[in-house]
Amino acid sequence: MNSADNRPIAFLDLAAQQARLGPALRARIDAVLAHCRFVMGPEVTELEDRLAQWCGAAECVAVSSGTDALQIVMMAEGIGRGDAVFLPAFTYTATAEVPLVLGAVPVFVDVDPDTFQIDPEHLRARIRAVREAGVLRPRAIVGVDLFGQPAPWDALRAIAQEEALFLLADCAQSFGAELHGKPLGREATATTLSFFPSKPLGGYGDGGAILTDDPERAALYRSLRTHGEGTTRYEVLRTGMNGRLDTLQAAVLLAKLDDFARELTRRDEIATQYDKGLAHVAQVPVRVPDSRSAWAIYAILLKDSAARDALQARLKEKGVPSAIYYPLPLHWQPAYRPHHDGTPMPVSEALAGRILALPIHPELTDEDVARVIAAVCAQEG
Ligand SMILES: *Cc1c(COP(=O)(O)O)cnc(C)c1O
Image 1 (cartoon, rainbow, N blue to C red):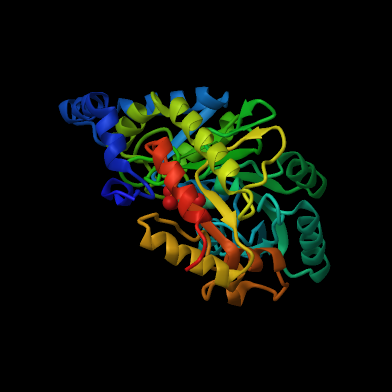
Image 2: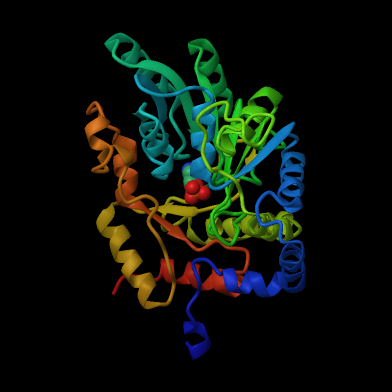
């Protein structure tokens, strides 16, 4: 192996992406520096229009982060004390954090062992149990498109309707993904996005958005985003927050959107190369039928945690980065354990020990991908 083969591979290569986007990105940033409308400048509205158009949603409200997007949507529904919000035990912490911030309780649901998405049968059982216990009022379901693949939206919509629950789509990891040939973004009453730098469409700082087809809800989200303001700036109609997206972030995202379709195609190619090269040594991602992932994360499953940890150490030696999403299911997190009723979540618990994410950003070359595959397949020792 020559020295070029040991050049470290980046888990996420924002510098290479920046170099590639180059002048387009600078021009967008310079335009903001020229007009100085750093808060709610014209780029914010332009971005909202482009994002709504991308998924065919009627409305888009750009906000300060994916977490704040979740909070604004739940505030608009009046979710708070005494309410139960059903969500997967295997997801990023923000999904569970927001109900707690608002005084509600996250009720964890286990996930499917193949797709890692929320398990609709377990969701039904959890809703039934909460109704029978009679302590919390079931209010909402949060579906999460984990790793960029769609949650079982058809089943979640049916359950939400039968149970008269609000359905929120946490698409922080899946903007750009498709289900039944259509972009995700209209699967639930409200959809939240994140533009954290590591997400498929990432900014240069925090950012997020809310998509909806309901103009009344969109108006409420806009009010909540700016301190609950009314028709004039100094009329406060409701308790809101400072949840706006910076103009500079909108400018960066607009430049990135121009190349986003190509990036998604590249991510999908890399995933296919990994599938072919790795299926004989690990469980590769099981595709949700009739969908295309945004590939926020490409995660393989090893046979147990010893095998996973050993592989991660070997990869590190070879300059191949990897990451564990997520090392703990949420119901085991110290902050959330006291709110959990003790129901075991065997699939989420097992996944946390066996999962390993490999680099999948669009700047990876075919040679990089081949090196990752070779490193994963190399025998121990
Ligand atoms: C990243 C993420 C969020 C939070 O988004 P931020 O923009 O970081 O606040 C919420 N939910 C999921 C599933 C995420 O992956």
